[in-house]
Image 1 (cartoon, rainbow, N blue to C red):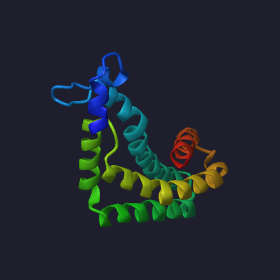
Image 2 (image 1 turned 90 degrees about the vertical axis):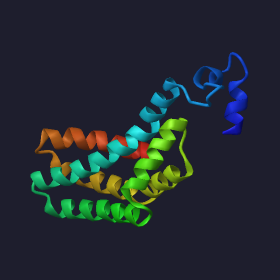
Image 3 (image 1 turned 45 degrees about the vertical axis):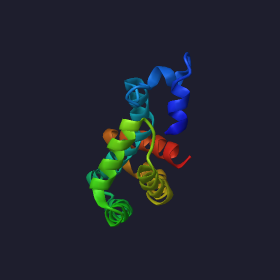
Length: 153
């Protein structure tokens, strides 16, 4: 953005250390921190949601699995209606390149935070005592609960 480029020209600033003023490219450190703090948890949450559906099935909790699948596929349907997985991937690549979220990625992540994350968080919290027969389910649910709390907050 314009302000980032102006700030990058001030010697000694953090922006000067992370942005090349000649090419306008963002440094690898800013890209890596963006991926670890924003993009990584978003994709990890999706993977953990799919794992949750599987863990419900493996522990014999078919109603919880159905509920989780409905929530997950409703969210996926919304993403497809808004441009699909390709749009999500392109927005992610553009955001990583810039080192900050684009408007498209913000919209996608907001829809995830507004609908899918709170519902999955509620379901996992309620269903947690029912999956304690599996060590993998317990560990993945604990991690998923904390990640969902971060997403919702």
